[in-house]
Image (cartoon, rainbow, N blue to C red):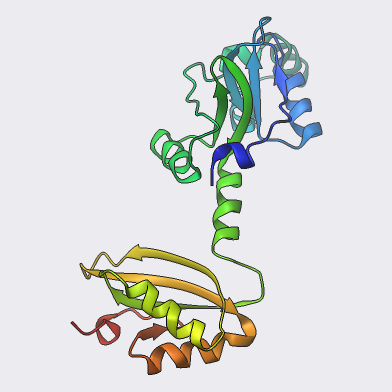
Length: 224
C-alpha cells in the first residue's frame, strides 16, 4: 500500500499571519488535527498541530486576565509556533515506511509532496486505519496464532491445509518471536464460521496453534 492511495487530498491551508484564535476555530470547524502553512506562492513553509495551539493557548492563561489573554492571542500567529523543519514524503512512499518516519521523528503527520507541489497529508490515524484493515479487525472473524519455523514453504503448508478444507484466509501477518530466534508468529484470521475447524485442521497437521495469550511459549514452539 502506498501513501498516494490513502492520503488526504482535500487540504486545509493557512497563511503564516493567521492568528491562533483563527487557527483554533478552523481546526474545530474542519475537525482536523493539523494545519498546513503556505506562503503567498502556495509553497509549504510550516505545519502546526492542535496540540501546538493548545499549548500556546494554555501557557499564559493562568497569569493573565481574560481581556489580556484575548489581546495576546490576537497578536500570536501560526508562524510563531509552527514547525518550520518539515519532514515530507512522496506519494510513492509505502505506508510502513511512512509509519517508520513518523516514529523516528516523533511526529503525527507527514505532508506529501510531488516536487515542490503540496499534494496531500497523511497522519498516524490513517496509518492505524490501514493496519486495522490489513489484519481484518472487526470483520466477524476468528483470530489465532500459528508458531512456525523460519523456513521456505512453511506459509504454503499452512495455506494448503486450509485450502483443502475450503477455508479462506482473510488476513495473515507475520513477525519474528524475539525470545526464540528462528521462530515466527503467523497471526491469522478466518471467517468466524470457520474458526474452530481451521484451528483443528492446523493442529492435526502438526502445527502449534494459540488462541489466547500465554506467558511461556516453550510448550508451543515448533519441533526442529
